[in-house]
Image 1 (tube, rainbow, N blue to C red):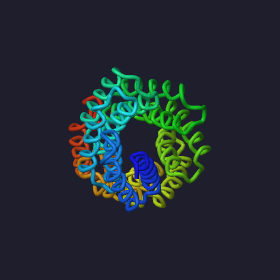
Image 2 (tube, one colour):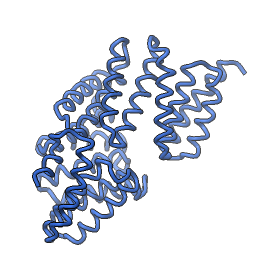
Image 3 (cartoon, helix red, strand yellow):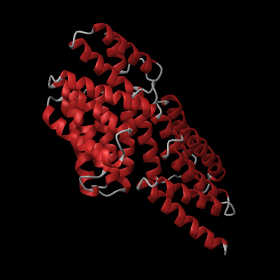
Image 4 (spheres, one colour):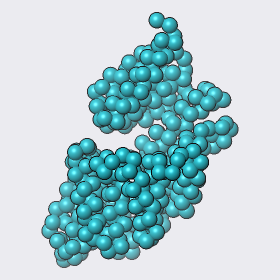
Length: 349
């Protein structure tokens, strides 16, 4: 078999592995990633970088985030030897993007931000694909939003949207990602009126492209719901969350963080409707699921803890409310900027 044959088989293995990951067939994905690694061993540094990057994605999908981080770092190191080549800079940026996104998902915002700034600085010495640059700016926008650097997040999203609009047709689902995030940033700032239009645009674009029952559409609906809740449209918010939860349960299961966060938002809807006991049950379920999935100190727990504390004040349990607030405050103090709105609110209570 010639090297050209091996290269063809490698491309097929990489493509099939990505499809298996999309289908959540982790056993097949691992087998294909191992196959890709074997084929890449004799095809040079960039081929190995591709296979190692894919292995990291598989490890992350099965929950081994420490191994995944190591694979992403290794892939970036291999690709970094070829930054003058288009394939080299593309692989390098992809590996750094995956590593930053992994840190973000674990609440390690400072590490993620540094990785992204370094990657963007490296990209300035070459001519990367606009899509790669857009994804880096989008990821930096997400990290900045979570940490409370809202102005930086807004600038990143504007840059990402401009880059994507230069290469994608109108209505492409890639644009929906940026609109989703722009809406999420306005929501984080408490500007629900400004948040609604981009959040709805994300739902419309993605639903048209992928169909109403796709997990990405459910994610968009779940993000729109708390915006509507903030606008006082409680019934519509509840419908969106019930629809999203049904999709998440079918595709991810009830132990997934996306399911838990949507459940926490449904608890907030139930809370506003005055169904306090049901709301408490939903808050507790969401909190337990997130603790199991992300650990006890992840910043995604803080909003649920804060909302549960507010519920206990309503129920006449101020001491328990204080304990919940203190836990949320401690989590956020370690991970976000001091002027983050949620942390500021908790400090004032």
